[in-house]
Image (tube, rainbow, N blue to C red; front, side, top):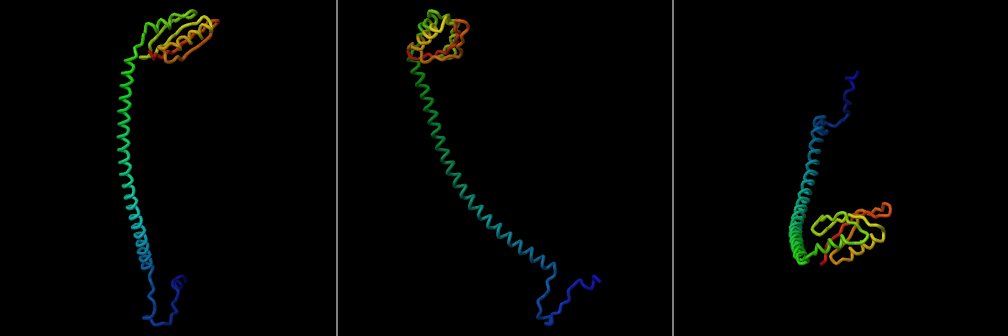
Length: 178
């Protein structure tokens, strides 16, 4: 029974030469493949053309950025040269300023109510002073006197601690001026 209804009978009464030819499944598939290939080729060509245009724009942008980077490199090398010259100038200025180390050490050591345990040089122009003050007043006077010295450009504390009536301290003294 299945064989009898495999194909629908053609009731077309036109003569065979006037009838449209019936396409087989293979022919339909072949036509679909050709149409799909043409469509994909068209869109592939459009994408390729658009990509080429984008690449040209990006290459132009890249050349401009490389030119700008070259100018920035020149500017940074000039800035480095300026820093180098400034450091040389600072060295020359520092050489002109002679630090009277003996006067500075005697200033740090000789204070009533202060016992200096150590003075350590921690840089070219930086000293670390470790000591003990008998009371807060002596400590404050000592700090003001050291900070007011023309040879001292700054005083900072690493440690200030009150134990009993005494004040233990570690301070950094930046040497500058003259």
